[in-house]
Length: 308
Image (cartoon, rainbow, N blue to C red; front, top):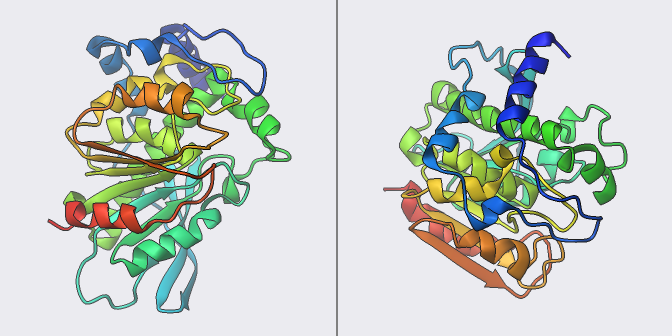
């Protein structure tokens, strides 16, 4: 690790050092920010963490493009920040008759990364959206070997419960989404007033942070996420969704969770977080566990917001 990176992480840890008590796997943790989020001055002090060079060359590589049942899927790689590349799948309709609203899609914690969200992406395209699905760091084509088996214990021990590493991961995801927005606007002439974010599971949890920081995203639809998942033991303040969810408003937020979700428990991790949401926010519950959802209601909600 370079000396500049070490210094940066040391600064982050020193500012956000308060942590939660360590719990064993299979418990839902809590923290002080779920009770009372940080004040505005503390929140503003974190904003330099998320800054990046908007003028950095994308150095785009279009690796593949296929047409499948009326949908074009482009496999892309472009530069996010120095030494970091975004691996993305771009879904659209060839020769669309009119410009489309777009969503950036963040997958859950599956080894296949963005490819695990293909069904959702294709559904959204058929409902009139363009979609850019990106790999989160350490997943999909960004697998570095850090997550060996991608089991729940592996992901938590190597990443989610490693507080400094997880904060660095959250910060990079925010930057990657910001650069994806830059790329969509610059390369595909996407209207920045018609851009939204969709996240599932771990992608939904980090999306609370992304939406609060990246103000160009006009709406967020977050599925099966929450404050902590079942096996998390603690995170630093600057990685805590409770310190961000209330700062998404007045942009609209749509949330879907399962009443039998074994990862994001309704009473322990979802409803306590929702108490800090601003308006307008819609909370929907369905009688399911932790699973890929049906997307019809989400698309019905997104369409009028991103098609003014």
